[in-house]
Image (cartoon, rainbow, N blue to C red; front, side):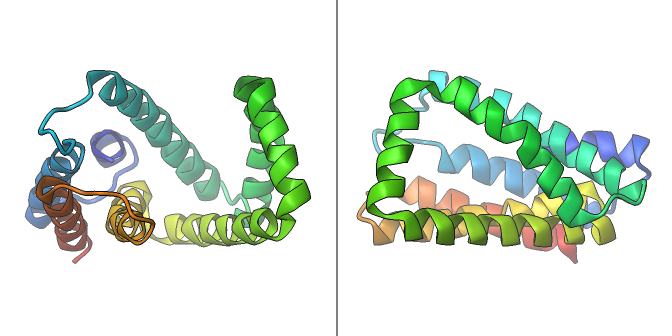
Length: 180
């Protein structure tokens, strides 16, 4: 999100306000705080992968934003992404994950179908929002999902530290501040 903001402001002419700056700092601090494990340490290997993932997420937000600025339709853009993404998923997943996916499709196809429908709907809604708000604001609001991830992790029995819970709350507050 921070990468998107620093690119979208000068190159895509998105506005920046003092509230946005404070919001970005809160979100960044909250993300760091929420990545601290129960033992108080940060797993450096996971953090490296997180940064690499963040770089690609920034790239796709900016790319989607530009495509929408050029009048691409949200659903078509999503479909085209799947045409590219699905073969890459199978290529990089490896044989074990493909077998696992086949087994889940045999035993519980409704979970995959319902989950896929929710994922598609949420991403198309995100693209529509991106078209109307700009990449910086859209990714900021998208990062509020961390609070829901923490809630769902508690529901399935994961143990969270106070730092992780506080980090999620700070991310949510920072994102909310940036959108006002």
